[in-house]
Picture (cartoon, rainbow, N blue to C red):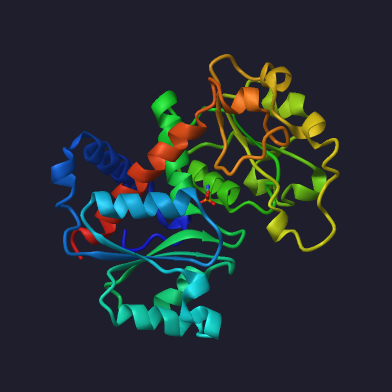
Length: 301
Ligand code: CP
């Protein structure tokens, strides 16, 4: 593993090694972890808003002993018209070892790779509606803390699947790990056309019946450019998770959401804030998984 731009580039073995690294970092003392990336510098470049991903990358790098630069885009020379290429190459000249990039442009990581020396690492923190590979890894790691085997789980993904990079990369990693039981549901305009993404369901009954893992998604209004935003008035009634709809799923199922959540829209507070929600476990695992990614990419560079 040389960079982390697309989750499809990781093999089953790469994923297993990252999870072992996360376990090791979790069991290490804080002092031991602080030596792992001593002398390295990580730059966080977030051209789109973030709470979880940005803060967890900063904490992950610092807890491994690296220096961290969080470029404040609003106050940077990007606001004066500096191009992405010039921004990246300017920072490269200051001896950055890894760039963590979130951007609205799909596949921006590949483009950035062409401008950088090969030893400098790139980590995709979300590109357009394409990929969010670190989220896919932390979601899978969280599932495996609750369920023994990934292959046979019925996984229900509900909401705006079409515009969701979280759904895209989660579906890709689940396929790599041998799961073909992904069920999708949401307003028709927010579902993908391709059947290779999962089984498109026709009702909450169908998607939730016997589900082991439920992943709720918010509507990505910022990515909807046509007039396909569904009627929000009836959204929760038709597509929301609450005590009544959760009862359709398997006893022992877990409820996930990548955040940020819209309470009483895709998920009710009574579900988000109580068992079987693992939403805050996802957040905690986000730091650990990002530590494992940084350690794996940078330890030998
Ligand atoms: N899940 C996620 O990417 O959250 P943020 O946008 O807060 O980083």
